[in-house]
Amino acid sequence: MAVIRKHQPLLDIVETVSEGGIPEIYYHRKCRSIFTMKKLLEKISQETAAENQQPGTARRFSIRQAPSTSTTYEQICIFCEKKSKYLKGTSNWEPLVQCLDLHANNSIRKKAVEKNDSKILAIVLCEIVAAEACYHGSCYRSYTRPDKSCTEMSGGSDESPEDEYACQESYTYQMLFDYIQSDVLENEKVVGLSEMTELLVSYLHSLGIKECKPSTKKHIRRNRQAEFGNVLRFENLLDNASVFLIPVKLTPLQVPRYVTALLLEKQDNMSQSSKITNIQQAAIDIREAIRSRDSRMSWPPRPSELNKGTLDIPQELTAFLYTLLTGNKEQSEGECHPKVQRLIKSFAQDFMFGVSRGKIKPPKQILLPYAVKTLTNNVELIQMLNGCGQGIAYSQLEEINTALCLQKMASKSEIPLPDNILPHVSTTLAWDNIDRLVSSKWNSTAG
Image (cartoon, rainbow, N blue to C red):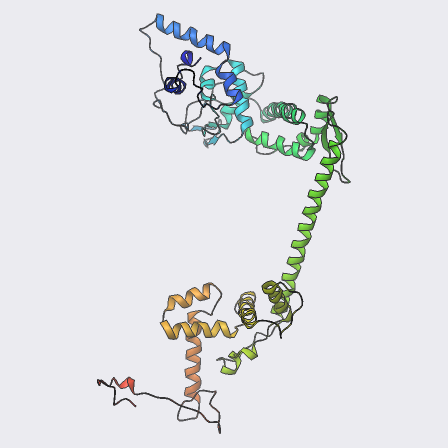
């Protein structure tokens, strides 16, 4: 068969296999049935004999592309061999559609066998989904239209939209019939009617129909009951409006098993949904607790406002972080590790700064950028901290510095002193004359 078809990959494998050896070859059953089809082999043999009788006439290849050994097809329509064309009656280009559905692959192969089209059969010998074959929607509809002669690929269809939709609808019903017969009945599956409806809509989309009419979904049960009345039952297995297709061959024990699996899956979905709902409600409660805090702060900020003891963390946020970090529901400050307390305060300040969108400025969001500026004087690091919600912006730091300078300039004291220096309180001061750039080997002149 490979010799008749002149299939070089198989011929190469045969040459490499020793006598009596079995080559490791994998194939699809449908591909093998098409490859070994007697009618096609006879036709190929007749064409080969005709070519040998007429040596002056050579086989004509397409001038649009050279023969390729690639595992993927060229980005052209497999029907009209054009990359682009106009939609009929419009000035718009019709885009190429890549074959992504195995049902489209099967429908093309089935129609090619009916038409005995050797060109398309040669293309669909391999899975055109894996080969990334492309086609125009109008070309696909024209080629796979049931009981209609194949029209010119460049011209499209002359039917009205209603007639074309009815034709595609009947074809999708036939595809759904094949699926139920080959998969549901053969494998004895219990399938929901909603799944059948979704599958029907996907078939229409693969044929280029973007919108499914309500009547198509409405009549799906009636049509299936008329076709499979003796082999399928349509019953409501649950307490809702869900209808399921049950093969008659199923034993009485298999149906309860499927119902039990459905109930367990439904219960898991409900429990998961309730968990998410509780988490969302907890997040809303914490958000409201943060937003209810007073965001007013003196300007410029005073040192007393930047102490750890002045931090007002909502009780809801503290309980949430404690449970999140420790896994315990009962909070005990005496038994809480100092590291956990430090992390709770750090994370709480980030939450408060982020939820309030910067209106609440905790001590961390002010002091951390100041420390980075003092150590590195790098503006980009401060902006990165601000982008991550770990500190205020660099422009706000400059505003605070300007406000502090103006405040000191407005004070009546001749010597500017920090606000935390109070009267009658012992204070230690340290100074150095390094600003005078004194240069000595042992720095003996330094004060």
